Amino acid sequence: LSGSSSEQDQLNFLYNWVQSHIDDSNYELRKPLLFTEFGKSSKDSGFTQTERENLYQSVYNSIYTSARSGGAGGGALFWQMLAEGMDDLRDGYEIIVNEDPTTANLIAEQSHKLSGLNRMFARMTANRKMKGLVH
Image 1 (cartoon, helix red, strand yellow):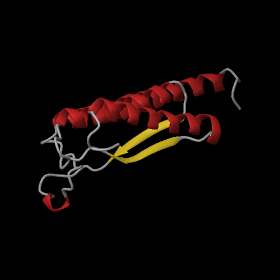
Image 2: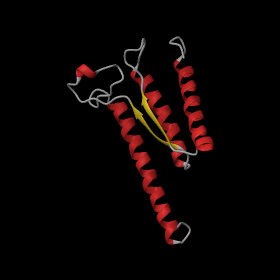
Image 3: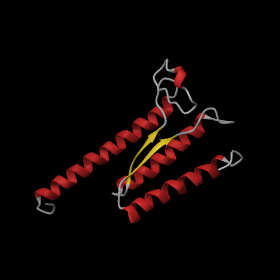
Image 4: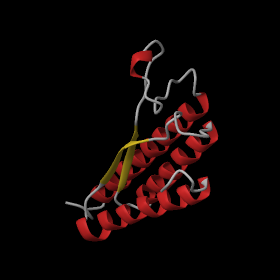
């Protein structure tokens, strides 16, 4: 979308784009889906940290909702995490934990939620195997 679109228009577009890819992966490809290299540049005109957090939350919510229901959404990799002192690699998309604690918390929360789903699905599969429902 053009830079003149509202943040809400951009989030709606993103949600629909992500959801259409999840749906295609679920129903057409029947394969897991990993979104890669997404982000919001701090170099964009009018950038706010809240906009970046809203974008991350939108992607993460779609992935988690899909994964929780056994769908194709498998994960999302943002661009890019840097350590302090890596200033030569700053491109506007960087996340530096000490400088972006709220975004870092969103990332950690998503990781914990997906890890929890993985443990839950592993227990369910083990229980089904014990009952002879899975070979």
